[in-house]
Amino acid sequence: KRKGARRKRRARVHEAIALDPMGGDTMAAYGISLVEQESDALGLEVLKRARELGAGGAAVLLAMARAAARQDRRGAARAYFVRKLPVADDRLPSPSRLRTWKK
Image (cartoon, rainbow, N blue to C red; front, side, top):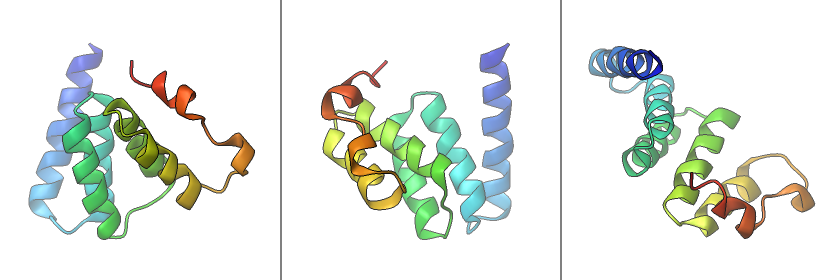
């Protein structure tokens, strides 16, 4: 059931992108759904585009970090936390912690 719901959500978001290709929030939702489905390369690309269009927020950055970590791009994943998320430096995920995100 859960896969079916994700596919339906992805299809709805894809239709919304077709209607409004410059909608950053729509692109962000599509990118997050791709990362949830473990399509990390495409999801990261879509999320980067969404941020160019003005979408942002913690959910987008966390999805970008997760996708980068699963692609063995731990430096990039850590950079999303360091540059954009308002957390103390001692609370940032260590490289060994990022390795555990690779489900």
